[in-house]
Image (cartoon, rainbow, N blue to C red; front, side, top):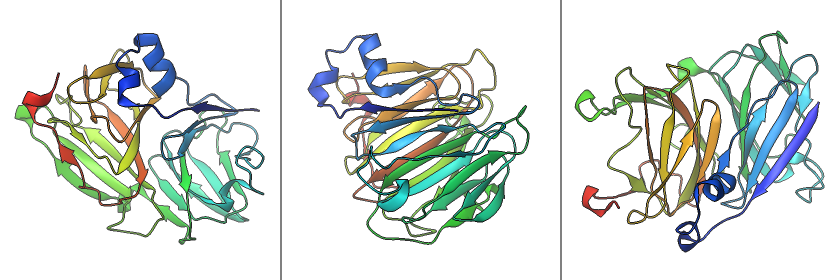
Length: 281
């Protein structure tokens, strides 16, 4: 078992104007999320979110971050959300075990001391995409089955952004300190996850792109200030950090899905600032 957590720093909008392709990718892209038997995490100084992949095979895996965070145990001052995008598995939270099938999610409140991940079949392991944010209060731990997610059809074929947003961790359905998470699926023949673009200065966001309809599909994720846009090209099961001041949008060569996770001072999902098409550069 290998455990790795890398740190990525916060940046001024003026900083990234001068980044070349490699520098942009090094600062904002998590190229490897899931490796059998390993835990691979990123700690971003953007609202101090921790995100990454837990892929158990023959042995259970547990995230242990105490010295790194200056605490006695990982979730002493944090909350946690996760989705399973792989084979079936289980999670055991302070001794209580629960089955987790593909596309199921979970919210774990602050104060849980042990969160242990397992796969049912090492040859087809579960892939737990985990996101943790600072917390100030304990809210109830809750399983979030895919069947219970709040489905919101969005977009249209004419604009190539027909999609369904599945809200799992959302203030309209449950209480959290700041974490929000969901799963967006684009329909065949659609490629934009949102356009016109928007910003939401009151919270940052990470995107984890997966379920590409073709193995050669690539997603072009756009970021930067509206008048100084940049892009990062992503392969399947890669994630990108999107600062709060940056535009939030992307386009794929075919349809795809992604998990979004947000945190910050405002939990209102539609609190965003639209960017006019004429403002983009």
